[in-house]
Length: 256
Image (tube, rainbow, N blue to C red; front, side, top):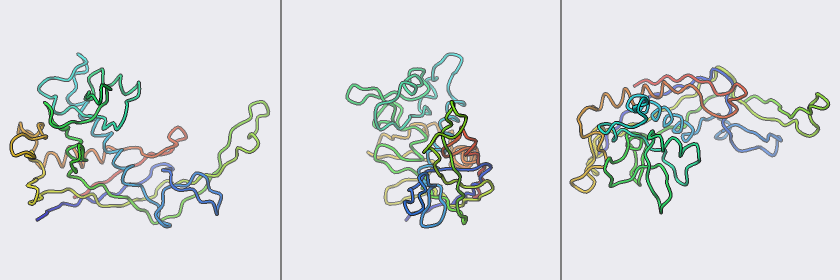
């Protein structure tokens, strides 16, 4: 038997929003926003990425010893990974070297991802969102809105003439401020077939668990739901692209 809990999410745009979708050759729109049919959406991967970012910040701000530039031994199981599928960038590598993110090796190349079995197991973020071929306990929704996108134009300024350079005036779509997107996030509470219970370490091989951070008993189901899911969803304040143009500010309400 499977038992689940639903979290109702409402994301309201506080500024114009642009999350890229498929261009429409019939309208000439080259920078479309994400849609399913004619319904505006915030794709699940975009919301998942924003949630992961907030979880990483929360764990580092809470447990990382910034004064001594190290991760305290007693909290190493809480250290997040970057979930990197390939080589890390120079900027990411600097964060790994500073000890903020996990360091793993893949064929002699440094990367940052959870590995199992390992000394400190899978990080709390990958426990929730999935890693190492293990599904997570959260199912992230697509958020949908009943509204049509608006259109604008952008171009490059020819500084010698002080006008828009010829051939650079291009259309793009945006979601207007005040648009409400809604969806339902699902938490897996119990899966009797696999023997998984939310908030408890999984015993994949009958003995050792990948969820070492839960072995201390400090994290109850209620605390995980409050601190790592609901509060981190509410902490998301921006999403999408064109942020240098003032896009992407949002506010999220999450209700059980």
